[in-house]
Image 1 (cartoon, helix red, strand yellow):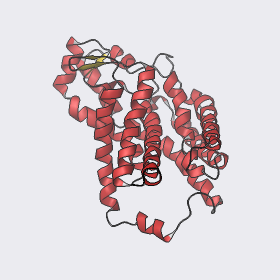
Image 2: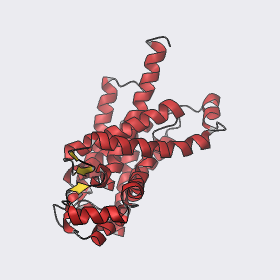
Image 3: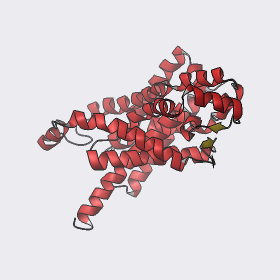
Image 4: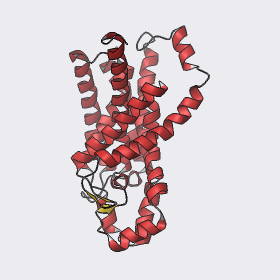
Length: 297
């Protein structure tokens, strides 16, 4: 897909759709009572979740037609862009650590964060499902199914590559979060990054992962996007030992963290990580095109 001016307009239109439907209209479903508190899935009721899933499905469905004939490539961005509004309006992670100063309180926070990313990924997946449903209504849209495409999809090693993509994504994203999202590094601690740094750091970290997964494993952005749910569990297993959390709770300010990944909320990881994964994928596609047609390699 060439990023021509018309495709830039399509991306802008899909992003605007997501920001209006998810970011603004659905905001009351997730808005915390305390405007300074972070957006958490636990604050959304079951009925609110069902409404949010329906809105995400509709956003993907409509986004496909707005971006046609590149609906599948662009329509999936509607929900993540909508969640960006929530990312911008959410309070920072340090609000939780400042309200829980004891080691037990800090550990409880980490445990509550461990699998929260799955919730937000399901919202993004609902938007992707809407795109696929819309695509079914237009059999001629998107990439045609060819014999070569089927052989490529059914490669014998596809399962191995897919399984390998997840740890590669987690390790790369975790490392580059530490590089790109650092606000200030003090010894072995990291401070709460500003929201702009979170935007850049999380997007760039998963763009690297999306690029590597496409370039070297020839897999889509789906796998790096799934990998967003594993970063926090990996961080907890690596840096969230009980003695470390106790030390930070007793001796360090609440705005300091063992690793910057602890300062980024699950909502932020999934929304920004999905956009980053898609960006990295298309950068890899563009890079391969450049090497083949511009340099003759």
